[in-house]
Image (tube, rainbow, N blue to C red; front, side):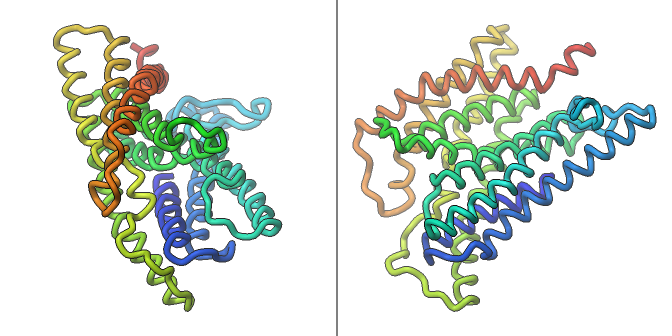
Length: 347
Protein backbone atom coordinates (compact mmCIF):
# COMPACT_ATOMS: atom_id res chain seq x y z
CA UNK A 1 0.00 0.00 0.00
CA UNK A 2 2.77 2.40 0.93
CA UNK A 3 4.76 1.51 -2.20
CA UNK A 4 1.76 2.33 -4.38
CA UNK A 5 1.25 5.75 -2.81
CA UNK A 6 4.97 6.54 -3.06
CA UNK A 7 5.01 5.63 -6.76
CA UNK A 8 1.96 7.86 -7.28
CA UNK A 9 3.70 10.75 -5.50
CA UNK A 10 6.77 10.38 -7.71
CA UNK A 11 4.59 10.22 -10.80
CA UNK A 12 2.69 13.37 -9.86
CA UNK A 13 5.81 15.44 -9.19
CA UNK A 14 7.44 14.16 -12.37
CA UNK A 15 4.34 14.79 -14.50
CA UNK A 16 3.80 18.36 -13.28
CA UNK A 17 7.50 19.09 -13.81
CA UNK A 18 7.22 17.61 -17.31
CA UNK A 19 4.39 19.97 -18.22
CA UNK A 20 6.36 22.93 -16.87
CA UNK A 21 9.67 22.09 -18.56
CA UNK A 22 8.55 20.39 -21.78
CA UNK A 23 4.86 21.01 -22.40
CA UNK A 24 1.98 18.99 -23.86
CA UNK A 25 2.42 15.27 -24.24
CA UNK A 26 0.40 12.12 -24.84
CA UNK A 27 -1.75 10.22 -22.38
CA UNK A 28 0.72 7.33 -22.18
CA UNK A 29 3.85 9.12 -20.99
CA UNK A 30 6.14 7.54 -18.43
CA UNK A 31 5.06 9.96 -15.63
CA UNK A 32 1.42 9.10 -16.35
CA UNK A 33 2.22 5.40 -16.18
CA UNK A 34 3.82 5.98 -12.78
CA UNK A 35 0.65 7.68 -11.58
CA UNK A 36 -1.61 4.87 -12.73
CA UNK A 37 0.67 2.01 -11.73
CA UNK A 38 0.99 3.43 -8.20
CA UNK A 39 -2.77 3.52 -7.85
CA UNK A 40 -3.00 -0.01 -9.24
CA UNK A 41 -0.41 -1.31 -6.75
CA UNK A 42 -2.32 0.18 -3.82
CA UNK A 43 -5.63 -1.04 -5.25
CA UNK A 44 -4.47 -4.63 -5.69
CA UNK A 45 -2.98 -4.60 -2.18
CA UNK A 46 -6.34 -3.48 -0.81
CA UNK A 47 -8.21 -6.09 -2.85
CA UNK A 48 -5.88 -8.87 -1.66
CA UNK A 49 -6.47 -7.95 1.98
CA UNK A 50 -10.25 -7.77 1.47
CA UNK A 51 -10.20 -11.27 0.00
CA UNK A 52 -8.04 -12.52 2.87
CA UNK A 53 -10.38 -11.00 5.45
CA UNK A 54 -13.41 -12.46 3.68
CA UNK A 55 -11.81 -15.92 3.61
CA UNK A 56 -10.92 -15.67 7.29
CA UNK A 57 -14.47 -14.62 8.21
CA UNK A 58 -16.00 -17.50 6.29
CA UNK A 59 -13.58 -19.96 7.93
CA UNK A 60 -14.71 -18.79 11.35
CA UNK A 61 -11.53 -16.87 12.14
CA UNK A 62 -11.32 -13.25 13.24
CA UNK A 63 -10.75 -10.90 10.33
CA UNK A 64 -9.55 -8.27 12.78
CA UNK A 65 -6.27 -10.13 13.25
CA UNK A 66 -5.25 -9.11 9.72
CA UNK A 67 -5.05 -5.46 10.73
CA UNK A 68 -5.99 -2.53 8.54
CA UNK A 69 -8.76 -1.25 10.78
CA UNK A 70 -12.07 -2.60 11.97
CA UNK A 71 -13.66 -5.24 9.66
CA UNK A 72 -16.65 -3.91 7.70
CA UNK A 73 -19.28 -6.08 6.01
CA UNK A 74 -19.94 -4.89 2.44
CA UNK A 75 -22.31 -5.91 -0.38
CA UNK A 76 -24.84 -7.33 2.02
CA UNK A 77 -22.22 -9.15 4.07
CA UNK A 78 -20.86 -11.06 1.09
CA UNK A 79 -17.40 -9.55 1.67
CA UNK A 80 -15.57 -8.55 4.85
CA UNK A 81 -13.14 -5.69 4.43
CA UNK A 82 -10.75 -4.05 6.93
CA UNK A 83 -11.72 -0.38 6.90
CA UNK A 84 -8.35 0.99 5.76
CA UNK A 85 -8.05 -1.40 2.86
CA UNK A 86 -11.69 -0.81 1.88
CA UNK A 87 -11.16 2.97 1.73
CA UNK A 88 -7.86 2.64 -0.15
CA UNK A 89 -9.27 0.15 -2.63
CA UNK A 90 -12.33 2.32 -3.28
CA UNK A 91 -10.08 5.30 -4.02
CA UNK A 92 -7.90 3.23 -6.36
CA UNK A 93 -10.93 1.91 -8.26
CA UNK A 94 -12.38 5.40 -8.71
CA UNK A 95 -8.96 6.64 -9.81
CA UNK A 96 -8.86 4.15 -12.67
CA UNK A 97 -12.42 5.05 -13.67
CA UNK A 98 -11.65 8.76 -13.65
CA UNK A 99 -8.56 7.95 -15.72
CA UNK A 100 -10.94 6.95 -18.51
CA UNK A 101 -12.73 10.28 -18.07
CA UNK A 102 -9.36 12.04 -18.30
CA UNK A 103 -8.56 10.20 -21.52
CA UNK A 104 -11.96 11.19 -22.98
CA UNK A 105 -11.48 14.80 -21.84
CA UNK A 106 -8.12 15.04 -23.57
CA UNK A 107 -9.50 13.36 -26.68
CA UNK A 108 -12.19 16.05 -26.94
CA UNK A 109 -10.39 19.20 -25.75
CA UNK A 110 -6.72 18.37 -26.26
CA UNK A 111 -3.96 17.91 -23.72
CA UNK A 112 -4.11 20.60 -21.07
CA UNK A 113 -1.36 21.40 -18.60
CA UNK A 114 -3.53 22.65 -15.73
CA UNK A 115 -4.32 20.88 -12.49
CA UNK A 116 -7.86 22.15 -11.97
CA UNK A 117 -9.66 20.55 -14.91
CA UNK A 118 -12.66 18.40 -13.79
CA UNK A 119 -11.02 15.01 -14.45
CA UNK A 120 -7.78 16.11 -12.78
CA UNK A 121 -9.58 17.24 -9.62
CA UNK A 122 -11.46 13.93 -9.59
CA UNK A 123 -8.18 12.03 -9.98
CA UNK A 124 -6.52 13.94 -7.13
CA UNK A 125 -9.54 13.34 -4.92
CA UNK A 126 -9.38 9.61 -5.71
CA UNK A 127 -5.66 9.51 -4.92
CA UNK A 128 -6.29 11.29 -1.65
CA UNK A 129 -8.93 8.70 -0.69
CA UNK A 130 -6.43 5.90 -1.34
CA UNK A 131 -3.80 7.66 0.75
CA UNK A 132 -6.32 8.28 3.53
CA UNK A 133 -6.93 4.52 3.52
CA UNK A 134 -3.21 3.90 3.95
CA UNK A 135 -3.18 6.24 6.98
CA UNK A 136 -6.03 4.20 8.50
CA UNK A 137 -4.07 0.98 7.86
CA UNK A 138 -0.98 2.26 9.65
CA UNK A 139 -2.99 3.89 12.44
CA UNK A 140 -4.50 0.48 13.20
CA UNK A 141 -0.92 -0.82 13.70
CA UNK A 142 0.28 2.18 15.71
CA UNK A 143 1.51 -0.05 18.56
CA UNK A 144 3.95 -1.71 16.15
CA UNK A 145 7.14 0.01 15.01
CA UNK A 146 6.27 -0.50 11.33
CA UNK A 147 2.86 1.07 11.94
CA UNK A 148 4.36 4.20 13.49
CA UNK A 149 6.94 4.44 10.70
CA UNK A 150 4.17 4.02 8.15
CA UNK A 151 2.20 6.94 9.61
CA UNK A 152 5.31 9.13 9.45
CA UNK A 153 5.54 8.42 5.71
CA UNK A 154 1.87 8.07 4.74
CA UNK A 155 0.75 11.37 6.30
CA UNK A 156 3.22 13.57 4.32
CA UNK A 157 2.21 11.77 1.11
CA UNK A 158 -1.45 12.58 1.80
CA UNK A 159 -0.38 16.10 2.77
CA UNK A 160 1.00 16.61 -0.74
CA UNK A 161 -2.17 15.61 -2.57
CA UNK A 162 -5.11 16.93 -0.55
CA UNK A 163 -4.39 20.69 -0.98
CA UNK A 164 -4.45 20.27 -4.78
CA UNK A 165 -8.17 19.47 -4.66
CA UNK A 166 -8.76 23.03 -3.37
CA UNK A 167 -7.79 24.30 -6.84
CA UNK A 168 -11.35 23.42 -7.87
CA UNK A 169 -12.42 26.63 -6.09
CA UNK A 170 -10.27 28.92 -8.22
CA UNK A 171 -13.30 29.73 -10.37
CA UNK A 172 -14.90 31.44 -7.35
CA UNK A 173 -12.32 34.28 -7.42
CA UNK A 174 -11.76 34.23 -3.67
CA UNK A 175 -9.80 37.10 -2.05
CA UNK A 176 -6.94 34.67 -1.35
CA UNK A 177 -5.51 31.69 -3.25
CA UNK A 178 -7.67 28.60 -2.52
CA UNK A 179 -4.59 26.37 -2.78
CA UNK A 180 -3.00 28.34 0.08
CA UNK A 181 -6.16 27.94 2.15
CA UNK A 182 -6.28 24.24 1.32
CA UNK A 183 -2.64 23.85 2.30
CA UNK A 184 -3.27 25.52 5.67
CA UNK A 185 -6.33 23.36 6.35
CA UNK A 186 -5.00 19.96 5.34
CA UNK A 187 -1.45 20.38 6.66
CA UNK A 188 -2.67 21.49 10.08
CA UNK A 189 -5.34 18.79 10.20
CA UNK A 190 -2.93 16.00 9.30
CA UNK A 191 -0.18 17.09 11.69
CA UNK A 192 -2.65 17.29 14.58
CA UNK A 193 -4.14 13.95 13.54
CA UNK A 194 -0.75 12.23 13.37
CA UNK A 195 0.27 13.61 16.76
CA UNK A 196 -3.03 12.45 18.26
CA UNK A 197 -2.75 8.96 16.82
CA UNK A 198 0.92 8.40 17.64
CA UNK A 199 0.89 10.03 21.10
CA UNK A 200 4.68 9.97 21.15
CA UNK A 201 6.98 12.74 22.41
CA UNK A 202 8.13 13.63 18.87
CA UNK A 203 5.30 12.27 16.73
CA UNK A 204 4.56 15.50 14.85
CA UNK A 205 8.27 16.19 14.44
CA UNK A 206 8.80 12.76 12.84
CA UNK A 207 6.06 13.54 10.32
CA UNK A 208 7.62 16.94 9.51
CA UNK A 209 11.07 15.42 9.08
CA UNK A 210 9.68 12.76 6.75
CA UNK A 211 7.93 15.46 4.72
CA UNK A 212 11.21 17.39 4.54
CA UNK A 213 13.07 14.37 3.19
CA UNK A 214 10.40 13.85 0.52
CA UNK A 215 10.57 17.53 -0.39
CA UNK A 216 14.35 17.48 -0.84
CA UNK A 217 14.32 14.25 -2.88
CA UNK A 218 11.56 15.48 -5.22
CA UNK A 219 13.24 18.90 -5.47
CA UNK A 220 16.22 17.33 -7.23
CA UNK A 221 14.56 14.30 -8.82
CA UNK A 222 11.69 15.95 -10.70
CA UNK A 223 13.71 18.41 -12.85
CA UNK A 224 16.35 15.74 -13.50
CA UNK A 225 13.77 13.12 -14.53
CA UNK A 226 11.97 15.58 -16.83
CA UNK A 227 15.20 16.45 -18.63
CA UNK A 228 16.35 12.85 -18.97
CA UNK A 229 12.97 11.75 -20.30
CA UNK A 230 12.83 14.68 -22.74
CA UNK A 231 16.25 13.70 -24.12
CA UNK A 232 15.15 10.08 -24.41
CA UNK A 233 12.00 10.87 -26.44
CA UNK A 234 13.71 13.65 -28.42
CA UNK A 235 11.67 16.64 -27.21
CA UNK A 236 13.16 20.08 -26.47
CA UNK A 237 12.85 21.89 -23.16
CA UNK A 238 10.99 25.17 -22.91
CA UNK A 239 12.91 28.43 -23.02
CA UNK A 240 13.48 30.32 -19.79
CA UNK A 241 13.00 27.46 -17.34
CA UNK A 242 16.23 28.16 -15.46
CA UNK A 243 15.67 29.41 -11.94
CA UNK A 244 12.12 28.08 -11.65
CA UNK A 245 11.14 26.18 -8.53
CA UNK A 246 9.97 22.55 -8.91
CA UNK A 247 6.16 22.95 -8.64
CA UNK A 248 5.18 20.06 -6.37
CA UNK A 249 8.01 20.13 -3.79
CA UNK A 250 7.87 23.94 -3.73
CA UNK A 251 4.16 23.72 -2.84
CA UNK A 252 4.96 21.90 0.41
CA UNK A 253 5.41 24.12 3.50
CA UNK A 254 9.14 24.54 4.06
CA UNK A 255 8.69 25.63 7.67
CA UNK A 256 6.51 22.69 8.68
CA UNK A 257 9.12 21.62 11.23
CA UNK A 258 8.47 24.85 13.21
CA UNK A 259 4.79 23.98 13.61
CA UNK A 260 5.56 20.32 14.36
CA UNK A 261 8.00 21.21 17.14
CA UNK A 262 5.40 23.57 18.61
CA UNK A 263 2.77 20.80 18.51
CA UNK A 264 4.99 18.31 20.32
CA UNK A 265 6.13 20.86 22.91
CA UNK A 266 2.63 22.17 23.67
CA UNK A 267 1.12 18.67 23.82
CA UNK A 268 3.83 17.64 26.29
CA UNK A 269 3.22 20.75 28.41
CA UNK A 270 -0.56 20.27 28.24
CA UNK A 271 -0.24 16.70 29.49
CA UNK A 272 1.88 17.75 32.46
CA UNK A 273 -0.35 20.67 33.46
CA UNK A 274 -3.69 19.06 32.72
CA UNK A 275 -4.89 21.52 30.13
CA UNK A 276 -8.17 20.88 28.34
CA UNK A 277 -7.88 18.10 25.77
CA UNK A 278 -10.55 19.82 23.67
CA UNK A 279 -9.14 23.33 23.61
CA UNK A 280 -5.46 22.48 23.06
CA UNK A 281 -5.96 21.02 19.53
CA UNK A 282 -8.00 24.08 18.51
CA UNK A 283 -5.30 26.43 19.83
CA UNK A 284 -2.62 24.35 18.11
CA UNK A 285 -4.59 24.55 14.89
CA UNK A 286 -4.87 28.34 15.09
CA UNK A 287 -1.14 28.59 15.76
CA UNK A 288 -0.41 26.27 12.85
CA UNK A 289 -2.66 28.33 10.59
CA UNK A 290 -0.65 31.47 11.36
CA UNK A 291 2.71 29.70 10.89
CA UNK A 292 1.78 27.86 7.67
CA UNK A 293 -0.19 30.76 6.21
CA UNK A 294 2.46 33.45 6.73
CA UNK A 295 5.45 31.31 5.69
CA UNK A 296 3.71 29.81 2.64
CA UNK A 297 2.88 33.31 1.44
CA UNK A 298 6.57 34.25 1.53
CA UNK A 299 8.55 31.04 0.92
CA UNK A 300 8.74 31.31 -2.88
CA UNK A 301 10.63 34.57 -2.62
CA UNK A 302 12.96 33.06 -0.01
CA UNK A 303 14.25 30.27 -2.24
CA UNK A 304 14.14 31.81 -5.73
CA UNK A 305 14.31 35.16 -7.45
CA UNK A 306 10.65 35.93 -6.92
CA UNK A 307 9.55 39.37 -5.70
CA UNK A 308 8.67 39.66 -2.05
CA UNK A 309 4.90 39.48 -1.48
CA UNK A 310 3.17 42.58 -0.16
CA UNK A 311 3.06 42.78 3.62
CA UNK A 312 -0.73 42.97 3.59
CA UNK A 313 -0.86 39.66 1.67
CA UNK A 314 1.25 37.91 4.32
CA UNK A 315 -0.88 39.42 7.09
CA UNK A 316 -4.07 38.36 5.30
CA UNK A 317 -2.76 34.80 4.91
CA UNK A 318 -1.92 34.67 8.63
CA UNK A 319 -5.36 36.04 9.59
CA UNK A 320 -7.16 33.55 7.35
CA UNK A 321 -5.02 30.86 8.94
CA UNK A 322 -6.49 31.43 12.42
CA UNK A 323 -10.10 30.23 11.82
CA UNK A 324 -9.11 27.68 9.16
CA UNK A 325 -6.34 26.29 11.34
CA UNK A 326 -8.59 26.19 14.42
CA UNK A 327 -11.20 24.21 12.49
CA UNK A 328 -8.51 21.90 11.12
CA UNK A 329 -7.09 21.35 14.62
CA UNK A 330 -10.52 20.46 15.97
CA UNK A 331 -11.24 18.03 13.13
CA UNK A 332 -7.75 16.50 13.28
CA UNK A 333 -8.22 15.81 17.00
CA UNK A 334 -11.64 14.26 16.45
CA UNK A 335 -10.37 12.08 13.61
CA UNK A 336 -7.47 10.92 15.78
CA UNK A 337 -9.96 9.88 18.46
CA UNK A 338 -11.93 7.95 15.84
CA UNK A 339 -8.81 6.11 14.72
CA UNK A 340 -8.05 5.20 18.35
CA UNK A 341 -11.68 4.35 19.20
CA UNK A 342 -11.11 0.60 19.25
CA UNK A 343 -8.35 0.97 21.85
CA UNK A 344 -10.55 3.18 24.03
CA UNK A 345 -13.50 0.76 23.98
CA UNK A 346 -11.25 -2.16 24.90
CA UNK A 347 -9.80 -0.17 27.81
